Image (tube, rainbow, N blue to C red; front, side):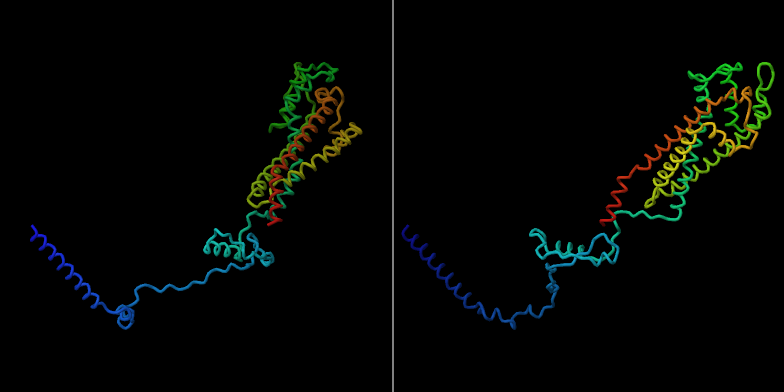
Length: 349
């Protein structure tokens, strides 16, 4: 046992001595540090460059810059600039982000305005004038059509206080014969339409002079309807054009037309109030020939349409005319706040 332990100790000692001698030999074989750092001994110095050499890029300036208005296409406004202080960049913004912001702020490229500017063309001016002049005729045609209707006729004949016919027509008789007159004014028939209307005894209800006058009345009303129809058609076409993007709109024409309508009707109401008889005769003298519109009290037209009927017609038709004009005037202010805000934004842009 003692001999085995002695042999193991000698083997361990011999291995340690051999490892120490090999380590010393390796240290002696290593080249010195200066030789390793010598470029002449470095073979990689003669190898080709495989990666591009990074260049030092100039960093964006953080000094004061000149800023032009961002939404101005006017060269005069572009010349107006302001300074941005050097410390405007926040601590959390990187150099690249600050460079992008600075470029956008100092760019002199024209920008489209955010607020559209309304442009007036010749057609806009013509359309405004057309709508202004057409509005009174359209309103008058509507008022006349309301008065010359069976509904208003029935209301008049059966309302309390309407004067009775002293020659024997009842309210039902008046409504029956008066309806023929109203229908004649609205249809396309000739004067024979009224000539064929007869009373129970077989006599025609209208004489020749009455037929001639009603033909003149129908011609005048038909002319009014035609003017109103042409005016309405043109107003719609101009309205579609003027309501385009950047167009001036129809609010000015509607407003002026409503104002003119109210002024004209107010003047007519004053004249009628000062003297209804004078106003009524003056109206007929303007639109009808002398001697064609005056009848006796026992003629059918006077019995069906006494003076009180025309007074009530003037009040009802004039009231409807003014009411429609007020509605148009109110509608002309639709979108007024938005238009005012756009104008203010254009001034501040």
